[in-house]
Image (tube, rainbow, N blue to C red; front, side, top):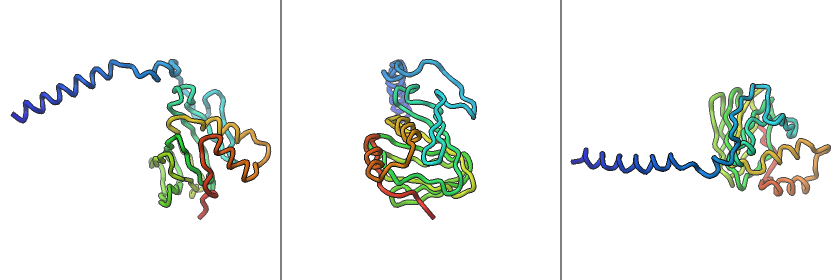
Length: 184
């Protein structure tokens, strides 16, 4: 009897799952329909952003995903750190390719090394500090939001903005600036 009930449940789930696979989500039809390959030294649309001395290489643009995802690659050196900030409309994920990086997420601290990933949900303040001599990380925001515009604008600044201008700049890009960079 139990076997028949499970079989019936599996058939029902299969029917529902099968019908949902046949339906193409609306955002899928609006994304870039052309696959692409980028080599390690290549960036999407030639975009490299130097943000506070750290290079961010655009690998997948929100233009490719109808705003669903932006993916970046970065090279880092010891003591590189981001200002403590919060994303109001995007989640962020970091995957450490090599090196050792300390992440602060809210009040918690986690040391990550090659192969480790941290998921940073929106509305939770976070930052990182590179502990090793060098590090490489992939990171993405989902959805893409205003991340690319934020990096592009920051990298084009000729001088460091005042604290008030920086607060406004973060706000304009759906971010909150909530503290200084992480230090040891």
